[in-house]
Length: 446
Ligand SMILES: Cc1cc2nc3c(=O)[nH]c(=O)nc-3n(C[C@H](O)[C@H](O)[C@H](O)COP(=O)(O)O)c2cc1C
Image (cartoon, rainbow, N blue to C red; front, side, top):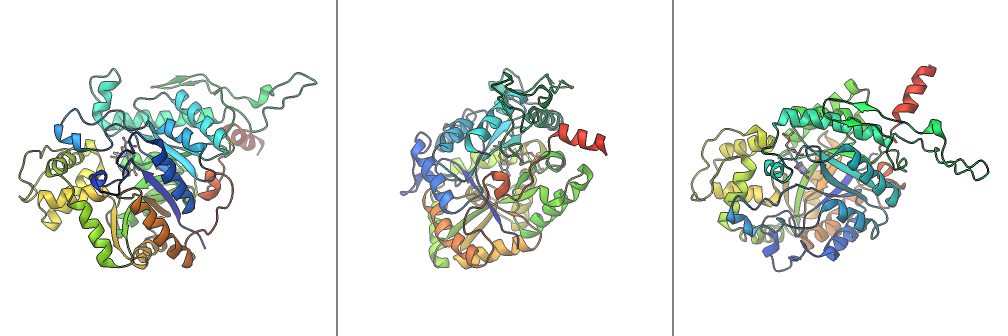
């Protein structure tokens, strides 16, 4: 029976925007590396497949002074964080975001090939075109490119990235002292890429990864995002508010793989899931309400404005949500949130509270068996291959998940009871990608 895959989405004090105000929160996590070691240790105790950090290339805060209430405006740079966590972990996959809009593929290929060698094959990169347009202002650009062009660049970027990761055959480095041959010439491959956006000669100056190539993640849900994932990604993160939306997303992305010569199980679909769990429903609800009450209305409105792409700051939080059009350029979640508000007839406060807790991801509040019931239902009914767990607050809510929900999933035979394999691909039940050069010579031989 297949087992569920679990990722942990880290963020300094948690994903709830007011998490840092909770008395038990590690409110200094934005400067304190030990807090992240603690998260990683708890995730390994819970036998998680991977730990993931998102990233953006700006501090968010310059637009609205209400964002001085935000705990992740300035914190640790995720790639550096992953390399440091490598030394404090043994099993878990380490994945973080890099931007196809602001990075060069050669640089990213080197970084993650190295992370993979350091960790024995536990590295992965989440490729994004970067949602926050203000990032462009930090990278010598006047404005962010429009989404179609960003995705066109991302497509070529990923192609170059994967080509560079194939620069060396696994047995290229023979280190023959007798003949003074360190590597075999014909096991090195020069990419010679000349495309519309990138010119990259290659080869990469880092050897092949122990898992073939680092795991590639994609998290955009638009048409272009889904296509990119179907073509090249190993994992796609999602944000679905209900099993029906998750099933549609799952069926859609899986159906795209065949066109790219791939099997449906070569792309793992992991929707985000925020869980508040306790022995009783009342206890879980009380924990959740405590966090909700900590949201400052100015922060709630500023946060909502940015996520849906309309300025709602300064408005009365208790008026009904105005009827506004979706802003496609800020992402697919803008439309989903507006639709939800309309359907439920919510006020601004109700909408930001809903969004602030799980940032547009699925939200569960209940006992371990209630949480496991929903996870099982999604897993067994074509909605996901596992979940990207989005704890509202560290350390408490993540520890509750590992202590209460993980054993329940294990009892039901839905989740591993020990780490198996060595690499992140092993854990995710993903095949090692064949080098494009090996594939070309295999098909030439046919
Ligand atoms: C779990 C998850 C993680 C994400 N991480 C990032 C990130 O680190 N940086 C970023 O700019 N966007 C991130 N995104 C946003 C998407 O990558 C994408 O940019 C956004 O959804 C807009 O693209 P779309 O219209 O294709 O959905 C993330 C989305 C999800 C669901």
